[in-house]
Length: 383
Length: 99
Ligand SMILES: [Zn+2]
Figure 1 (cartoon, rainbow over the protein chains, first blue to last red):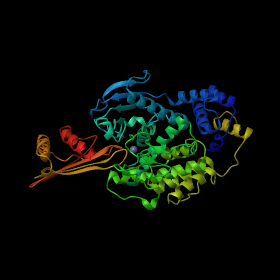
Figure 2 (cartoon, protein in one colour):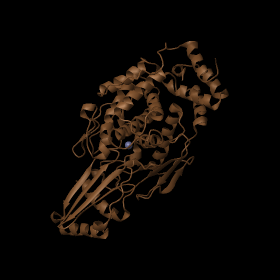
Figure 3 (tube, rainbow over the protein chains, first blue to last red):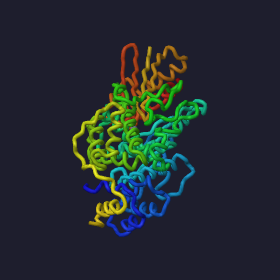
Figure 4 (cartoon, rainbow over the protein chains, first blue to last red):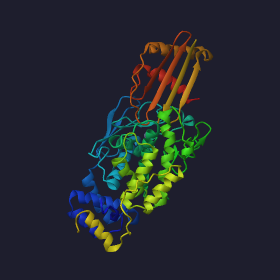
C-alpha cells in the first residue's frame, strides 16, 4: 500500500466531505479510516466528523444487537430483552450490554473499517443475568455472556458488581469473537495469553474512544467498577502497571507480571492466560504512550492489522513482537517514530524484536498540499 | 468417610477458588445434606466428560469425591457442565465463595 503513510495527516473538511459524498464505498471507507486516524487533531463533535462518521456507518454496517435475559439460569441465550432499535428498558444490565456492544461495534467500524465481529455484519448477541452469583463474563464462541457478580450475597459480603458495568469488559468479550474469526489464537499458554491481551487492548481502546481520551489521559485499567467498595482495588488488571490493579485481604494481590523475567509457568487457567497477558498489555501501553495521541489511531491500527493479517493460531509473544514491529514499518515507515515506539514497548517487557527489514522506506511527513494529495491519491481521486 | 475437593479456575479474572472438605468436620446436618447431593447426582457413577475447547474467560470446574473405597473426579466447563450436578456445584461454590 504505497501511499498508506500519507493518510495520517490533517485534511480540510471540504475534502473529506467530497470523498464521503462522491466517493465509492471503498473510498468512503478509506476516508472514514483517515478520519479515525487523524482524530487526535480535530474536534470530534464538529460537522466534519459527523459527516464522515455517516460515511463510515454506511460502509461498515450498523450494529445488529440483541440482548437476552437468562433470568439467573444457565440456558443460553435466554429470552429477548432488547433488540436493535428498541428504546432503553428498565433493566440497567440489559442497557449496558446493548450500549457497550454498540460502542465496541463503533470503534471497530470507525477506527478499523470492520463490519462487526466477523467483518460480515454478524449479529451481536449478549446474555445478561447468567446464573446466580456468577462473578464472570465470557465469550462462548457465538455470543457474550454476563453474570451479575455477587448479587446473591448480602451487600456487605459482595466482592463483584455486575460484569456489564465496565465498558472495557464488553469490548474484551466482543474482541474474543474478532480474534476467533481472525488469528483464532489457541487459548493456552503464550498463544492464550496473547489472545487475552488482544481482548484487553481493544477493550481498553473502546473505553478510551468513548471517553475521547488520548493515551496519556487514559487510566489503562481493565474492569474498572467491577469491584464493590468492599475490595481495595481500581479494577481487575492494569495495563499501565501490571500487578498493581488490586491488593486486598480477601482477593490477594494482582498477580500480573510486566516483564518476561516474571512470566509464570502454570497449569492453572490454561497456562496462566489471564496472568501472563500483563506482559503484552504493558508492551502495548508503552508503545501507545511513546507514539502519543489517541491510542486507537496508531498503536491500535498497527495491532489491528497485525491481528487480522499476520497472526495465526500458534503465534507466540516473540512472533507478535516481530510482526507488530514489521507492521509499524509497513504503515508508518521503517525507522518512523511509530515503529520506534513499538520496539520500545517490547524492549520494556524484555522482548528483543527481530527486524525482518521489511516495510516502506522512511518518508518526510507531508504537510499542506502534499498531505492532501496523498489522501486523494490513496482513495483514487487524484493522480 | 467422605472428602470433597472442589476447584474453580479461569474466568475473566483468572482467580482460582477452591475447597477441601472433610465431611466429618462439618455439622452433621450439613454433612448429610452434602452426602445427599452427591448421591442424588449419582456423582460416583458419572462418566468423565470429553474435554472441550475452553470458552475464552469461561470457568473450569473440578470436583473430586473420595470415600474409603473410591475416588472419582469430574471436570467440566460452563459450556458442558452437567445439569444434574448443578445443585452440588452451587453448594460447593457458596462455601468456597464465603471462605
Ligand atoms: Zn478474555
